[in-house]
Length: 130
Image (cartoon, rainbow, N blue to C red; front, side, top):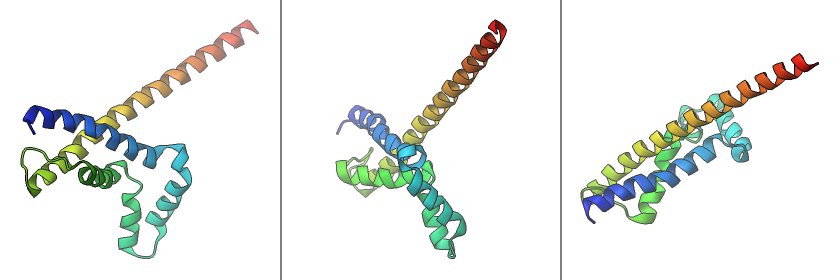
Protein backbone atom coordinates (compact mmCIF):
# COMPACT_ATOMS: atom_id res chain seq x y z
CA UNK A 1 0.00 0.00 0.00
CA UNK A 2 1.33 3.45 -0.91
CA UNK A 3 2.30 5.79 1.94
CA UNK A 4 -0.41 8.29 0.94
CA UNK A 5 -3.05 5.57 1.13
CA UNK A 6 -1.71 4.46 4.52
CA UNK A 7 -1.99 8.00 5.88
CA UNK A 8 -5.54 8.35 4.57
CA UNK A 9 -6.42 5.02 6.21
CA UNK A 10 -4.86 6.25 9.46
CA UNK A 11 -7.06 9.33 9.68
CA UNK A 12 -10.22 7.60 8.47
CA UNK A 13 -9.84 4.42 10.54
CA UNK A 14 -9.34 6.52 13.68
CA UNK A 15 -12.88 7.93 13.25
CA UNK A 16 -14.82 4.74 14.10
CA UNK A 17 -12.26 3.88 16.79
CA UNK A 18 -12.85 7.21 18.52
CA UNK A 19 -16.60 7.02 17.99
CA UNK A 20 -16.90 3.56 19.56
CA UNK A 21 -14.51 4.38 22.41
CA UNK A 22 -16.34 7.60 23.28
CA UNK A 23 -19.79 6.04 23.04
CA UNK A 24 -18.98 3.10 25.29
CA UNK A 25 -17.21 5.20 27.93
CA UNK A 26 -19.36 8.37 27.98
CA UNK A 27 -22.81 8.10 26.47
CA UNK A 28 -26.10 7.44 28.24
CA UNK A 29 -26.85 4.22 26.36
CA UNK A 30 -23.98 2.50 28.19
CA UNK A 31 -24.51 4.26 31.55
CA UNK A 32 -25.42 1.16 33.59
CA UNK A 33 -22.52 -1.04 32.42
CA UNK A 34 -20.20 1.96 32.77
CA UNK A 35 -21.30 2.62 36.35
CA UNK A 36 -20.92 -1.08 37.18
CA UNK A 37 -17.37 -1.08 35.79
CA UNK A 38 -16.52 2.13 37.66
CA UNK A 39 -17.79 0.58 40.88
CA UNK A 40 -15.76 -2.59 40.28
CA UNK A 41 -12.67 -0.54 39.39
CA UNK A 42 -12.87 1.27 42.73
CA UNK A 43 -14.15 -1.42 45.08
CA UNK A 44 -13.05 -4.81 43.79
CA UNK A 45 -10.98 -6.93 46.13
CA UNK A 46 -8.11 -7.67 43.75
CA UNK A 47 -5.76 -5.13 42.18
CA UNK A 48 -5.70 -6.87 38.80
CA UNK A 49 -9.48 -6.92 38.67
CA UNK A 50 -9.69 -3.21 39.59
CA UNK A 51 -7.24 -2.36 36.81
CA UNK A 52 -9.11 -4.48 34.27
CA UNK A 53 -12.42 -2.73 34.98
CA UNK A 54 -10.72 0.68 34.92
CA UNK A 55 -9.55 -0.08 31.37
CA UNK A 56 -13.22 -0.37 30.38
CA UNK A 57 -14.12 3.07 31.80
CA UNK A 58 -11.32 5.21 30.33
CA UNK A 59 -11.73 6.28 26.70
CA UNK A 60 -7.97 6.31 26.14
CA UNK A 61 -7.52 2.82 27.56
CA UNK A 62 -10.61 1.45 25.83
CA UNK A 63 -9.45 2.84 22.49
CA UNK A 64 -6.55 0.38 22.60
CA UNK A 65 -8.98 -2.55 22.64
CA UNK A 66 -11.05 -1.08 19.83
CA UNK A 67 -7.89 -0.41 17.83
CA UNK A 68 -6.75 -4.02 18.20
CA UNK A 69 -10.14 -5.16 16.91
CA UNK A 70 -9.91 -2.84 13.88
CA UNK A 71 -6.33 -3.89 13.15
CA UNK A 72 -7.41 -7.52 13.04
CA UNK A 73 -10.56 -6.67 11.08
CA UNK A 74 -8.85 -4.54 8.43
CA UNK A 75 -5.31 -5.98 8.40
CA UNK A 76 -4.05 -2.37 8.41
CA UNK A 77 -0.31 -1.88 8.77
CA UNK A 78 1.61 1.39 8.80
CA UNK A 79 4.98 1.85 7.03
CA UNK A 80 6.13 -1.78 7.39
CA UNK A 81 4.48 -4.92 6.03
CA UNK A 82 5.34 -7.25 8.92
CA UNK A 83 4.31 -7.35 12.61
CA UNK A 84 6.09 -4.04 13.23
CA UNK A 85 3.58 -2.39 10.89
CA UNK A 86 0.80 -3.53 13.22
CA UNK A 87 2.58 -2.01 16.22
CA UNK A 88 3.14 1.31 14.45
CA UNK A 89 -0.42 1.34 13.15
CA UNK A 90 -1.85 0.49 16.56
CA UNK A 91 -0.17 3.29 18.47
CA UNK A 92 -0.74 5.76 15.63
CA UNK A 93 -4.45 4.94 15.49
CA UNK A 94 -4.81 5.31 19.25
CA UNK A 95 -3.04 8.67 19.08
CA UNK A 96 -5.19 10.05 16.26
CA UNK A 97 -8.41 8.62 17.75
CA UNK A 98 -7.67 10.32 21.05
CA UNK A 99 -7.05 13.64 19.32
CA UNK A 100 -10.49 13.25 17.74
CA UNK A 101 -12.06 12.45 21.13
CA UNK A 102 -10.35 15.46 22.74
CA UNK A 103 -11.63 17.76 20.01
CA UNK A 104 -15.11 16.26 20.38
CA UNK A 105 -15.01 16.82 24.15
CA UNK A 106 -13.98 20.45 23.66
CA UNK A 107 -16.76 20.97 21.12
CA UNK A 108 -19.38 19.46 23.47
CA UNK A 109 -18.12 21.62 26.32
CA UNK A 110 -18.39 24.77 24.19
CA UNK A 111 -21.93 23.83 23.12
CA UNK A 112 -23.00 23.22 26.73
CA UNK A 113 -21.50 26.55 27.79
CA UNK A 114 -23.34 28.33 25.01
CA UNK A 115 -26.65 26.69 25.98
CA UNK A 116 -26.21 27.76 29.61
CA UNK A 117 -25.46 31.33 28.54
CA UNK A 118 -28.53 31.39 26.27
CA UNK A 119 -30.76 30.05 29.06
CA UNK A 120 -29.37 32.71 31.42
CA UNK A 121 -30.11 35.48 28.92
CA UNK A 122 -33.62 34.11 28.31
CA UNK A 123 -34.29 33.93 32.06
CA UNK A 124 -33.07 37.51 32.56
CA UNK A 125 -35.20 38.70 29.64
CA UNK A 126 -38.28 36.93 31.02
CA UNK A 127 -37.67 38.39 34.49
CA UNK A 128 -37.38 41.90 33.05
CA UNK A 129 -40.67 41.54 31.17
CA UNK A 130 -42.50 40.41 34.31
